[in-house]
Figure 1 (tube, protein in one colour):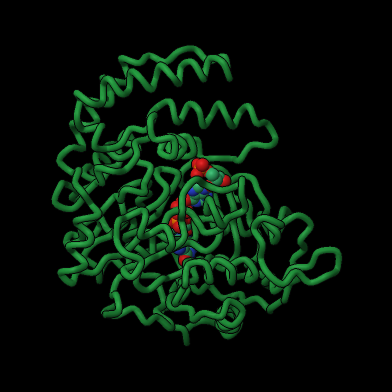
Figure 2 (cartoon, rainbow, N blue to C red):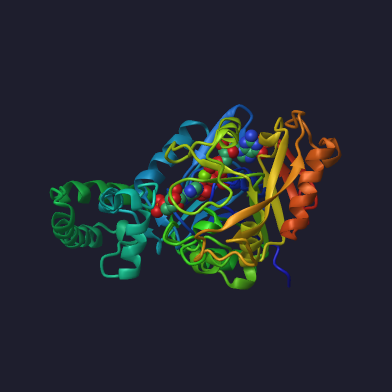
Length: 434
Ligand code: GDP
Ligand code: IMO
Ligand code: MG
């Protein structure tokens, strides 16, 4: 049987508008599951005049009948989760054990992970990765190391948690003192705080892999909510300027506990231009007036850190690569409205190095690549009220058509504004949409 599930992944460097489309698609799904990353993600959902920025809780939370799942592949920061839960409840969004499940096998982000993230970045100087300082790399590092990892199952059992924290913190204190001359942390304060956090989240904790497999077997539809963007993937991104998890659709089975056959229809998120936060290669970057215009019009400042995002033209070479990596069936093109008012718009159609054409995108060999652009005429109209493809000005339609041709995938959705309803259903094949 062909899976009815849907996977949403970012095809650039994150912040492609995943939150908005996940909220929209969750209307026709039963479960929404995060499988990668952690509170480094910042996913925005705008409903009417209410804006929500979610870091850990899946964006299906605004649909009362949806069960939201934080999968085993997530770097779970209980301080962020509890804060987010409380804030949502305070704004009238119902979140409880009935609609939010947290994997017992997820790895816990501890205060020393965040400390290590910041200390390590500071020590790297100009060579820093530009992380979100959310402790993501150190948490996944401990996961790979195993003996120093703390999982959610440990977090909710004080008898296991307290001795584990004491043992691991003693190791970290030695390392931080030796490497960074850091003062020792107050271990008992961490024990007390995390025992309390464990108590708060315990009602949500379960084996989410079993839960999802049973749900799928019973005919339920799952939406997998990607974090970050494929060019930040730990294996396939622009290493070392990447995050520390598998963020393509390949991360869905390991990060959630379902079979690869249940990844379903993959929707690849792209914004109509490119942005990147933090360091690393960005061939189409416009560190100039155009980049500044895009940043101001698109309000391109980080949802998690508030940092200004680096901005540039759409890169069809990079997106062809990431669409292939994830087996993307259709694209969702967002922030098209931000390009309104530009005299011309550009798309990178190939790279060259020293004059020679570079055939394939190679994330490990980006030095010296120069994008070659195709220039298209711009459009001046405000498109934020358009709800059908035919309503868009001809030049905006031509731009969408060209992206479709260059990436070799149909554009299923076009987003023309941050609000939930500012979406055009174009060539989507996702069943059941209203
Ligand atoms: P995510 O991490 O992929 O969920 O994306 P972010 O939420 O970090 O960043 C996307 C930003 O663009 C958010 O502020 C959204 O509210 C906003 N946004 C999403 N789609 C559109 C759109 O089509 N047009 C405009 N102008 N803003 C959008
Ligand atoms: P969403 O889900 C944009 C970037 C950081 C940094 C690199 C490593 O909102 O699209 P990390 O803290 O993960 O160790 O940082 O990855 N990064 C993101 N950039 N959007 C994100 O998430 C990101 N998550 C991580 O800026 O360059
Ligand atoms: Mg974001």
